[in-house]
Length: 477
Image (cartoon, rainbow, N blue to C red; front, side, top):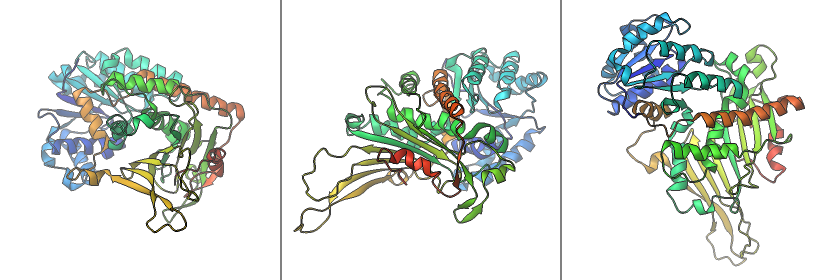
């Protein structure tokens, strides 16, 4: 059932995600005239607040996290906001929540951003209060479990009240402009797709590097680790977009069908195809920072870095390694995809040093696309033609003047309100991701693998370099 919501109900409305991302995204959409004119936004959380107090809370968040030129008429946006306190662990508050939603029960979008342990009771409370009918859709913020079994438990609880067509599982990386542009690059240009296979591509690298440490996620992160926090969702989504077959259309099911095929083609890792690490004290950006154990104030075996060599067992990608790495307290903050093409089969330029073409898709902090090509060095070439690799750079903000960089949640919240599922994750995707991740963790347990130390401000443990260099590959840095 397709409809545009009249009311958006935000669970976790006083949390960090709401302050940093959700409220700024909604305000920016409102400033651009993209929110439905009559849309009401009802926030809910444990803290008791009046509408006025919540609007003051929202104003402070917007002034801190949203640039002034994107706020528009902020007072008009704040007037959309309402608040109803609710403890999801008790059933009583849901009736008051239903009253706050009012007549919008038939055109309601819900964004559920709570601890995974509260998903089941929240869903049941919504159902009992009549907030799970045919005119209601629900968005679920990650994490969706800690393994395949817990993910299935959460999905079963949601499916008991909502059909798959009204469930919107959020991975905010899919809201990033450059991630979506990856699909345009592949499927809107005849240049790349004929070469996008094992015949012409040597390997693919995907890096998600962070300079931050634990921040305010101490307990959550130590129970989760880099593999489950980053690889299971963000990195496997990026891999599936790089490797998927062309979908029949840019509609939800055709796109997600092809992503699932990629995830199911992932080969189980061999014992020597993964490296884990944990940062020690060092310097990041010129600032001395403590080690993980110092921040945690105890010893821990949780990995803050992971590097993997993955393979896809299908016709398009057989024999092409996908190198994945992610970590905290790295040398710099960067998310990028590197597609390394094979070298020309024969060089006619004697003595010239040939380098293969390389496509680099930058996702953050800068959104750009760079393609390296071999070109002749200017000169008379009396000793033979000299060649050098030169980049063709497209900085996305420069290519599209007059546009501004959007928060990833802007696209996802608007799609939730309007009911467009293409950039959301389907249940079978989530479970295929967890199945592969669980197998890696089981292998680590069998091998007794312990994280290798690396200095904060580096690119991770030396074993990660060796993981790629065994194949003659260097990480792009």
